[in-house]
Image (cartoon, rainbow, N blue to C red; front, top):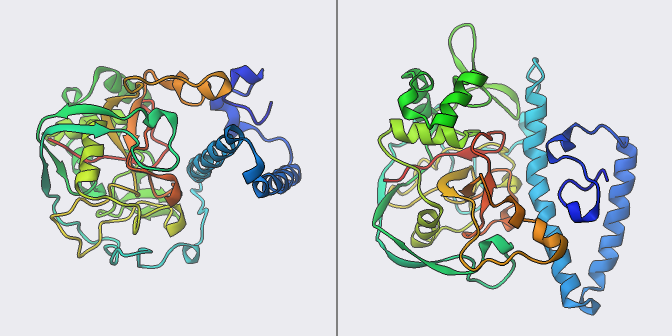
Length: 362
């Protein structure tokens, strides 16, 4: 019961919204259970070649599901500790990565440095195939491959930065209804939102942000993160642009040859979005994979021809395909091996505890 928050077909379950509040079983029991599972999974994996194909596929799905919860642990720990009025650090500075990205990327911009102005990159229109086309694992919501018609569009070459989003905040963006969707404006007023999650001002008016080492000065060049869809769309309206559709995002990612290598992932050990490299090529599209999940203006619906799996597996994705928006690209809390260009994450429009950010289109 304690370990089931998804599957009604398996009987009574924990409410998904309440699973982070459970304080039992004790930590020692959790460790014993983890050891038990690890040992039995290791035995099962050693016999993988002898298992039926369906069993092997189920194990593979389970491993990818565990990677999703690795990300959730990172973001839930941050959120839970942020509610402490002392704003405690949850990592020491020496535990974080140094001044370089791992992989082929150059040095990230120094904290406090201004980001280069964003550039608009064109993507040709046409008929494109969307969905998982490569060998290897994918979730069922990435299938089937289908064709879409898109008009020519432009995409900004990096994520919106803290400095850019701060301009929206200080221009009164959270007090001007004309930029907001109706439900978003109601939420802003009901909850008293005046800035992104984890932002605050000290007595001197300096903007701070809660991060791995506690309260830190807002890094102007870093991507704005922990942004809800409502905030992302309002910012885009204020900036005279829009959010891309998920098809546009996937087409652009292929067009610009985005790969996970050199991105800012869970294994990079920053545990926070990082600025674009100081010497990054302005003609290339950066941060498409890693740093922040990017909101799209696409509802999370099944692709044409999608068939929900029979049994409990049908509850994995299919039952959530309503009233949520698609996000693309992964984040600084996503394991690198977990992401693909076709990966479809999804959240409700008000959610902002994940590393969610903004890329503009027009």
